Image (tube, rainbow, N blue to C red; front, side):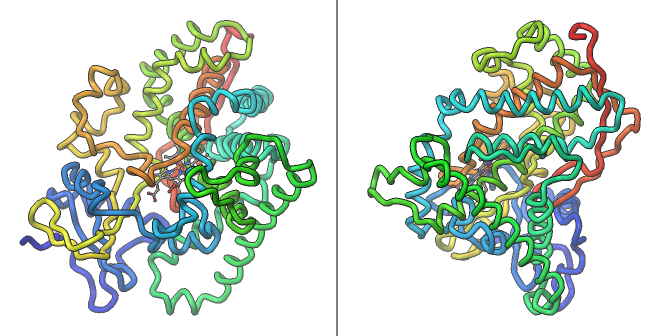
Length: 457
Ligand code: HEM
């Protein structure tokens, strides 16, 4: 049996004080680069945290007969507001299965086609807003957040944030940012420290209440509209029953699901699009290929059809490679179902959590040639065949993998295609990547400028 490598910590406090509150993931990635074993452990806030990034070890922790997702920190903190919604439900709670089966049809490729008019409507608002702001420094992450929040709320719940009408971000977003950041900080605090920080507790509670008030408003509006008939997420939750057990979702659970979808359904896709634009500005030859593709498949100014968007090939590969290099969710965790040996040598006791550290896995030299290079041709079908089966997990794993994957990728394809069809992009401020972490990652302070491309003037 081997000892899991671990950086030296302090008595009692362990490694807690070594981890920067604002950017824990960058610290973990740095530590990971010092251990070729692809695994290490830390003592954080009195807990033992094991992180893995060797693709073979990750393949083992993705074996759902040995490891499952259980709700522990930081997810147990997010549960303060996600409740028993899909993201933060424990596998033992029957409501996870009820909601999963009720909602799965709403995430089929067929449903993406049904949502397409709404995807298009919001993406066109982004293009109109950028057309009016040519030459200005555009706050990329904020505008991608406007796009993705408006898209999930319109398609999922028929609710309009109209985010592009306002220079300020909606109060929901400010509250969400506050709550997610606090959840991240609490994850690294000893519980007595959290209790001492009374002011933080107050603003945390206020943020959660702000988010819940919006959710109540969304549901109230639907009920006032007569409720029935609409086959969007909210319509299904209000009316459908679990095909396996016949169970219906309680009002409380629907509230939790709406909040879960409002958060999970936009925050990550916004990060994906922001990182994708960053990559395109750094890789002019890839940008040129993307322009060629949109000029070929989306000539003129007509709104593209769903079928046309599905024909894109370069843009989806830009998205896949972006999710490899900058995964908006930097880690997901699973728990050992019983005592088990990892890699034949590391004992993981029953109940111990293991986090898959995605930035290090996605750049593991064991799985990727030239891991730091942005190469969209890795995602050509003939090259994909050679990938290590566990080296790419931006959407998590197995039964608890992301339900919104197709939603995110369809929405992001369309948005990127419409942006590139209309605009030449530039980065006169020569942005240098600075990660902002609020549980998910985004490029902090990234701006770009646009001007209309001649062909479409
Ligand atoms: C779960 C990533 C977009 C809804 C997850 C997980 C990951 C992930 C890694 C697993 C978390 C874990 O194991 O703890 C992403 C990324 C996205 C994205 C990278 C965009 C690029 C979306 C969208 C929606 C969504 C658009 C909804 C419309 C969810 C939900 C879960 C989830 C509800 C929990 C699923 C369950 O446990 O049943 N996502 N996601 N996600 N995602 Fe996403």
